[in-house]
Image 1 (cartoon, rainbow, N blue to C red):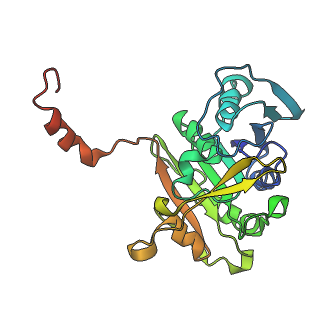
Image 2: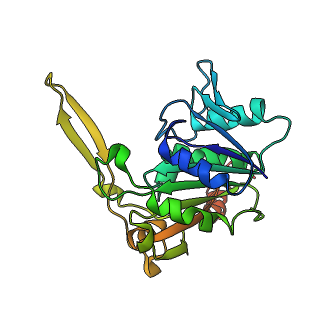
Length: 260
């Protein structure tokens, strides 16, 4: 099995090194093609206004001066043309990718690019307990549980245009309660924060903070699973069409000429 690894924390990130360790227990044909620098929040962006450069760090180990999407496209379109990967693993991200995070996340977007190419793809992220941890974020839960999470997914026939998003809770590996398959959650956007600070020269700058999770019947979202110290496994689809609105929109346009 040929596995492609990528991420959005950058080619030197500890989470990517951990993912490489785990991947090499599954295969001896592991490739790393990741952004040269951190690209958190890059989403599914593609670099179109400047050239990209490839830097080789070792055998089957490359950095791309671009986004996670660029990295996957470079892997598929330049580096692995003789034999495409059988699986794409993206991560392990420093910080969770839950709820609407998936629309901003470069980690999830790299897996999306794999899904667009028809390759099974899994995004993996490690939640952490408090702000300001920087490079001290512990990956204990991911290290101990990633193999067990991946085992049932390897070789699974994924529907076209789908991927799997995995998040590990911010607790010690021994405290993980298990694995929960759950739906994507949603935060209370009205309670999101804009944190204002002042730099040494007296000018204002800002950080965005996230609102609290909304509780749902059955507590079946990724946000609630992580809060309860479960590993959240969420299937995602690339087709964003809201099927429920199709009929009502057709009715609204029914009287307009040329609308069918």
